[in-house]
Image: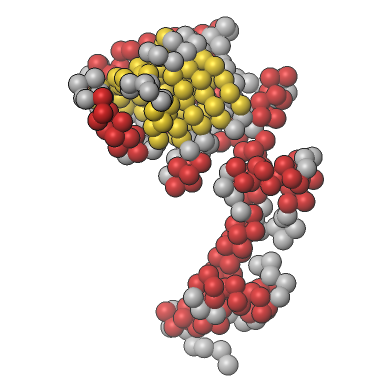
Length: 325
């Protein structure tokens, strides 16, 4: 399937609202940030190369933004590979700012906030593909963020040439031909994303730039750990506690609230589990990281609208289990 988006036929005053509506309902919702006192010009082509979504855009007069709010509200676990056909584009992200020129490539993630800025008439192509379809983990992509990938080596030159040629020709090709491009597109994108060795200087530098993402991943993977705290995170990453707060604030993460919700959800599951029917409320509270039984009961009621005992009794009634004396 292919489609064309062109605002040149619309009155200048209608272009912003038209584009905003289209962008917010796109596979990866985006925001439009018009440049002051500039007319917006956009001509886009969209094509589906099997599981690879292609957006080819020539634009000026506005920035495209994937905000932190949108990443939280509409999570999409995909990699975005941008290659520039002509002109200059700037990508701002948590890992830094990169300037791309013709042939250059850069990688973003739909889980990461970013801003894409166009100079007048910049023509660029973006390929979106999920980590599952790439058969890669997000960790394999993190080290690529915040870097310009120049077509100055055999691998990068081949990938850049293929992506640009595909973006120019695929939207006009028959559906069967578009679909046949899925396998080579996946193979070359995977090659691009896995070519960096983290032991190299470039790998170490990109690893440092991906600190914010690694901190967030660390937090979410250790919510079961009762020792998780701002101090333990700072110690693990050899950074200050103040900087941990800054990173989490930028990501919209309230560590205390996140841990509390996770532990309450775990407690609710335990209260529903027949295998834990003989465990006391105090035991479950302690097991889920609450040292004080009374505090646990108040917090649980505030989250779920009933006490832990009421939650357990309701679950037993649903499963028709006899209440324990």
